[in-house]
Amino acid sequence: MRKALRWLLALTVLIGTLSTAGAATAAQPEATGTTGTTGTDIKDQLLAIPGMSLIEEKPYTGYRFFVLNYTQPVDHRNPSKGTFQQRITVLHKDTARPTVFYTGGYNVSTNPGRREPTQIVDGNQVSMEYRYFTPSRPAPADWSKLDIWQAASDQHRIFTALKPIYGKKWLSTGGSKGGMTATYYERFYPRDMDGVVAYVAPNDVVNDEDSAYDRFFANVGTKECRDRLNAVQREALVRREPLEKRYAELAAAEGYTFTTIGSLDRAYEAVVLDYVWGFWQYSLLSDCGDIPADAAHATDDEIWTSVDTISGFSAYTDQGLTTYTPYYYQAGTQLGAPTIKFPYIEKRFIRYGYQPPRNFVPRDISMKFQPWAMRDVDTWVRHNARHMLFVYGQNDPWGAERFRLGKGAKDSYVMTAPGLNHGANVAGLVADEKAFATARILEWAGVASAAVQADPAAAKPLAKFDARLDKRDVEREPALRP
Image (cartoon, rainbow, N blue to C red; front, side, top):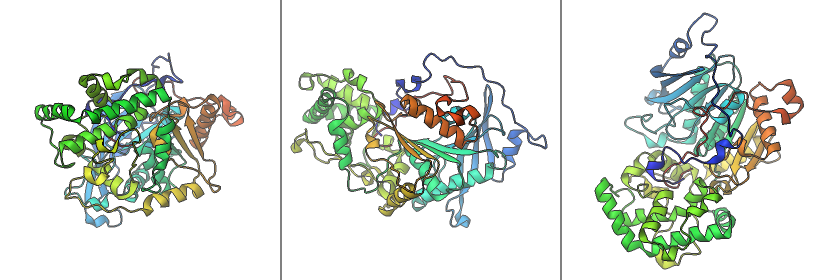
């Protein structure tokens, strides 16, 4: 989960065009179902919910889009211990349509956007900012209240508040950390949703056992591509002195500091060790041609540019880490974090190795790892999953440790999109799995036609592709994050 901050807008890949290439932006009908039986406007219905307030409404053809604040307790077990304002958005289409509950696990976008399940079911979409990502953070922040149960309880309260308005079926969804979030929500509140679509969701059950990642990197893609990437990564460490001098010049020019991680040297190595992972997470095999073919004879500028483009030298600065403190806190307390080996790099060139999440969180925030948290979720999914779909990319490192289903799972599936990365989706599955997955999503949402129920091969998204609303770019996060 790593990248340069300037790439936060996303790296465009071909995933979104797998099923929609050439599709023109369709003219959308006006939003319907905007009034209830009493004739109340949808905005007034939303604002009538206790604790709900309007930040702004943005126009979008065929929908109404609201950015809202919702008052949440800091501690759902002790609601009297204070509250905070959590940002959510509502992409309203029709109260008679199903609703998709989306979270990316980080900040929420305040611009209209439609996730893949929302397009498939032609529904409404509620999106939630994850607690403790600013501005959805209590002040002062009690970091002990940032855990997966508290976040799931945020979702439960939002769902409970909105269900009287949006009374049809609900699905939850999210990608990467958002896919993890949707899964945890299902584990703690299994009666809320009618289905779950979790994309590229890591599942680090045993934090200290990461050999699956080493096996992944030994076989992913082609040997030629792996050799190119490994050589550039090694060369960046061999040339540490001149490239760190350039890094220091960049830091001085941009005002970067390194208090949290400890030093520029630690930050430099962390960025370089992210390089191979970052490539496979966000790029395709076809992008290997952009990697220097002969690293040993490449210029310093070529090595620097390749590493900066993929990993991002701003990632481990104080300025780059601050936004993502909540993620690193969770990785170091419950989610776990991967550690991989570098057999092609001599030990004398690696001083720190993959650094733990503790190194990326300010020292005044205490952290203690809870090894039972992910084991509990994994066990629950294996034995209790109902109406759950997990989608992974074949070439995505985060899929090396994934959710798996046991005998107790019912109407639940794990599917892999061939050749795809951290942006894998239903559209990228092979044809029969794509149709089957689409049919199950439509069925869970209560909008599958008789034809689809009789033959899943007939299943297609109910809403036409909208080039602005249905952007399928891979959402890049700077540094090793899901």
